[in-house]
Length: 417
Image (tube, rainbow, N blue to C red; front, top):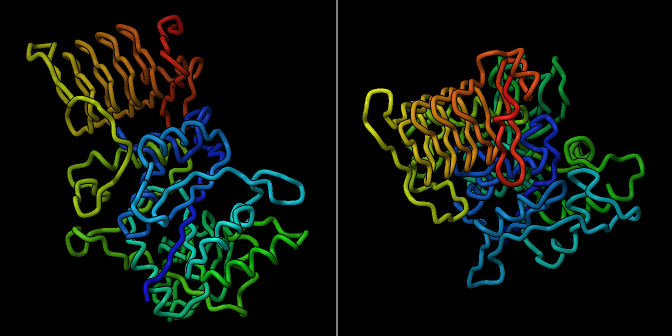
């Protein structure tokens, strides 16, 4: 029997801890790796896994995300069950509100599930960086005849206070949930690690519909899968944890390490980008059997010009997106976005530069994130004087400088001290 699988991607979170990168965009629309967006990871995982029917549930500051989905993910197949469609809150709750939680987001779109009548519903978040063969998780769900399967990643037990922890039996059957509990039970096979929930679920459709209607009628519920629905199902439904470390990606070498990052903070986001430019990155973007898909841009190739002493365009241990021009400037250990210009004598180090930024002559940028369209004037220095930087920009506790972008060009030449 050919399984009918319907996917929902939860892309409505505010992403407040990523401010100011989320000042004008939803977290899933934040650029990543030079030419991608965070949401590209989950959508690529779904398409690469052969799941082609996806609704993207959007909410806060969604214009940038909508534009990205339009430019890169307009998915028009020959069959009616091939689509990627963004869906705003339908105001189906009695209070006619926006999505009040992850479960409410599905309940407000329960008609889409009932109309499609799939065998399984896949519910994934849009704000993590990872590659996953979701087809293997589906097969695990079917093999165990589960009502619900939750993807889980083993983490050291000292981090249990940071995650929702899944308690399981030896066969993976779920017997408890522990929300950010420092004393949460460890894995049956490993007393030093716990199963952290990745927030990705597979539901048998009948089970999901039953639970959504029951949760919507419960006035004491926060209408969230992790807090309400899943804990309430312990002992009355067949629930299993899928161990993410067993997942295999076609085209990867044997025993390739798994990679999953929660980029919920500026520092975590920065480190995940820096992971990409290592010599042998754990997150492999060069596997042609498992491509990371994104918008189709008409950018020219990246270009490096001049080869004179003090005026040499070059990049070392860096990722440089199409359309960028290093015109006598240099970048080291950085991620450079589309259409960036780095002029003569300028140096960018350990930084993330979003699309269409302009780094003036002899400017020096270090440990910084520049949002779109920022202009750095000649001879400016960013990331060298923490006290001065904090007067002008957002600076994390670890010293990463974030310069906001705005609509159109941003010239900070009048902002220097």
